[in-house]
Image (cartoon, rainbow, N blue to C red; front, side, top):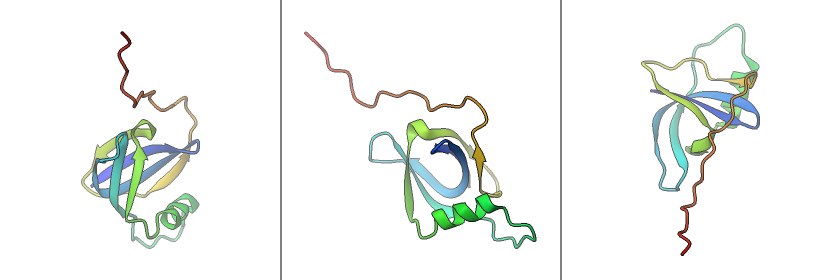
Length: 103
């Protein structure tokens, strides 16, 4: 089980998935088999519901490497959520095109 934190439109998404790996598409991470807590809670977090709806029916996501904040391998899933970006976290700058040699 993996916990993936990534930037999406100025917010930090925290999701859980069973499978992640480097994509054949250069510069992307593939995320499969999303896990959302099945526990019935009295208080429903709107950000969790938004994530469930956003990823409903999604088989696989391709997330740009420069949007990834952190990936942790965890023993069990937690609650997926969307957090406001309150800090100065910014994507790591990446040049995905090889440098051409000038002669």
